[in-house]
Structures are given as C-alpha cells and as structure tokens.
Length: 571
Ligand SMILES: Nc1nc2c(ncn2[C@@H]2O[C@H](COP(=O)(O)OP(=O)(O)OP(=O)(O)O)[C@@H](O)[C@H]2O)c(=O)[nH]1
Ligand SMILES: [Mg+2]
Image (cartoon, rainbow, N blue to C red; front, side, top):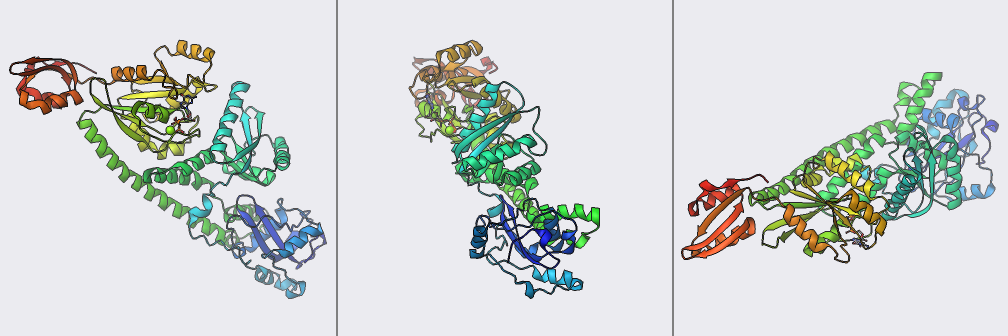
C-alpha cells in the first residue's frame, strides 16, 4: 500500500486510516475511498504509525461506514505521511493490514457492500473491555508534564503561587514538571482554555520539552480537553483529574478507596468519550447537512457501547454510595459511643501539607505518616489524649484541604468531612512557611462551611515557625492575635498548644458537689476521666468532689450529693 494525497485516489482505492487520539490510543481502520470523500475535499489521508496502542481502542468493526466517511472528509488529525522510513515502520507493525487493490471489487454499484467488507478487524486491537474502569480511569501515567494556567484575577504572584501548587500536585502524582506557562486572560477560552492562538505555542513547547502530558490549572470542559489534545497531540488533564489521581494513589482504607472511586466516576461520567461518541455525533452533524448519514449509521455500535458504559458506571456509583453509607454507619456507632461517654472530640483540619499529621504525632505520639507530599493523609486517624487533669479527649487527623477542592471529592468524602463537623473544637493548622497562609486559611474555611463545620469553635495554629520568616510571622500575629504559633518539628509551642486545647474543650454542663464513699474509688476515677474536677477534699465519710460533669453522669451521682443545687451552665 502506498500513502498518497487523497486527491490522487480514485473511488475504491484501498486505504488504511489510523485515527489517533492521544487519550485513547490509535485506531486502525481499513477501507476504500468512498466517492464522497473525493468531491473537492482537500483532506489528506494519513498513515501515521502512532505509539503502540497504550490503551485498548475500539475494534475497527465498531466503526460504522459513515464514521469512516466522516473521518475521510473531516480528518484534521490526519497528516499525509510521505517519509518512506515511516512507511517502513508501519509495515513492520503487527497491526498493519495491507489490502491489495485487486482484492476489492471496485464496481461503484457494489461500493457500499465492498466498503463494508473492507472494514477489517485489526488483530491485537480489540477493545472489548472486561472492566470499564480499566480504561476509563486512564490511570494517569504522568511522566513528563507541561503546566498551563490561565490567570484571570489577582496579582501575578497569586498566579505564580497557583502554578507552583499545581507543580507540587503534579510531583506528588509522580510526574516530572518540565515547564510552566501562564496566560493572562479575562476568562478561559471556552474552546481551548488558553487562547486559541496560544495553543500552537503550547504545542511547540510540548514538543521542544519532550513532554507527554499537559496539565491545566482548572477544571476543563470535555470539549476543551478534547480540543487541546487534538492540537497538542499529547494527553491533556485538568487539576481535578490530577487531584483525583493523587487521592487514588493514596487511599488505603476500604472506605477511602470507595470514596475516591466514587469521586472518579462522578468526574468521569460527563466526560466519557469513546470513539462512538465523537464520531457518531460528528456524523450526525454532517448527516443533517448533506443527508449522508442516516439514523442507522449514526447510531453505530460505538454509541451503544458508550451507553452501556454509562449505565455500568451509574450502577457502580449507586453501589459505591450504598457501601459508603454502610461504612459510615459503623463509624457513627463509634462516634455515638464517644458522645455517650462525653468524650470531647478535637479535629485537626487544615490545608494539605500544613503539618497536621506531624502535629498529631507531636501531641499524642500517634506515629501517623508524615510526608512532604500533598494529601499524604486520606484516612482519618483518631487518638486519645488526656488533659493535665486527666480528662480524656480525642484528636483526629483529617484529609487536607486545597484551593478549589474538586466538588466530587467534597461530595465523596462528605462523611469523613462531616466528622470534622461533629467535633467540639477544630484545630485549624496553617503552614506559616507557605507563601500565602491567608489564602490557605480562606480556602480551608470555605470547605469547612461546605460541610457545615464553620460554626464550630476554631483554634488557629500557625505551624512551621522554624521555617517561616519573621516578617510573615509578625504579620500573622497581628492578623490572628488568638492563634497559637508552633513548630511541630522542633516541638516549639507544643505545650502552650496543649494548654490552649484543654482550655477550649467544652466544659461539662453540670456543676455538682458530691461525697463519695471510699469504696467507690471507681467512680472517683471516672469523674477524673470524664468530668472536670474543680476541687477535692477527704472527709471522714468519703471523698468530697466539686466537679463539672455531663447530664448522664450527674444523674448517676444524684444519690451522693445534692444535685438540686447543680448549676447548669452553658458550654
Ligand atoms: N520546617 C517544618 N516542616 C514541618 C513542620 N511540621 C511538618 N513539617 C513538614 O511538612 C510536611 C507535611 O507534613 P504532614 O504532617 O504530612 O502534613 P499534613 O498536613 O498531614 O499533610 P497531608 O496529610 O498531606 O494533608 C512534611 O514534610 C513535614 O516534615 C514544622 O514544624 N517545620
Ligand atoms: Mg497528613
């Protein structure tokens, strides 16, 4: 087979089309030139080897005749390849299916039939997906990436911080960042995110850097992603997909994994694009215009398959929701027990990488994973701690927040995040060494309010004071006079923090004076654990205690004292 411009082809010339989509791999279609493709069309025919299909691609048999027609007349992805070396490489490929010209019946009357017969299944390129998730997650194997941001508001420093964070996210996901590009615009271009004219610059940058992926600093529409992929010829992902990918890599517990999968599927569903979708929709368009495509052709097997995939994903989403709900019940039971025992709960929340886990380790010796990576912690860890006077309370580490946390994540992790909302005190950790701690605080409070945790008492803790510069610290002290300044690394300020937490813990509601006989040592111990002991004295008949306790405990103590005198106070 020879590659030549389509103008030189006559109807029935055997051709092989390789349609490439960087996201999906390449698709090889063997066919013959339909007459419609020759009517003044300036499209070029391509024969482009492409990479050895990285992901399963649709089988040629799934591509209907009209779709091939469309490919011939509209192929912009096509490039005429005339370099012999390329052709040779093509020939060496296993997937190469040469179709000798004489094998085809070129009688025009038989055209459609023979064309249909000429659609061959290409060995080794089957796409019968065994599990839709395999392909569709497209486990982002990001390696060499170029970052792109559109700067719409704020200062240049803000824009740069944002891209720096994107770089940190990309590195956490395991990729190597080669270049970053920011474009100043009033708003992202609806078709290509960055300005249309800039796409070519981006393309050259990608080529020059040898990148295989472009990551955009925002959430892009499916068509923006597709347009960029087609023009840059590399995989294009957005910030949301990147964060989802990190979550997927880091989730350990069953619940965490289920939540991440749910978030990924929610993200994926509207973006599901198969060849079926792209091609059949496009055919539909040309069908209306020229009457070429009929209903049957438009609804090719590709589209049906896409529908099947969608249905399967919807089912899976429903199942995950049920599972997550069940797991949540278990956690709720535990929490209910804590509430019954009136154990105050402290939630450590904050921006990702602020040092929440380090702080939990410092405060309780918990031994939680600390990593200089974003979203190191996804599964909440709860540890017991005691106040200096022996009262028990819990401290929980939580998933970190980030600016524009994808809403799919917030939704999926709602049950985990809501646990924060159930806390009695939120210890909000801020990274004092970050270029913009105020912005971090703002972003965290935004997520907290989304899960209804913004009304809780909050204790701001500025961490990493060992690494922060004096000027920033002074500014933050002025801004947040109530905040506690610490270094989880060096242990500086930790005792002060512990005291402040104790002071801010809810105080049991009822104040009572009781005299407990000496054989009720157990009750005395419990009062120390669960109540707040204000004073004790040893009388001949027993231990006299002046304590604050919760209602339940106060009821138990009724026989030992005059609870009629109990003073109810609010927290
Ligand atoms: N210089 C300095 N670095 C710190 C301090 N506390 C934590 N770090 C570092 O900050 C990074 C993040 O710490 P983590 O405790 O994992 O932070 P995290 O908030 O739990 O992060 P995620 O779980 O990823 O959201 C690690 O590299 C820590 O070593 C500190 O007081 N000073
Ligand atoms: Mg952590």
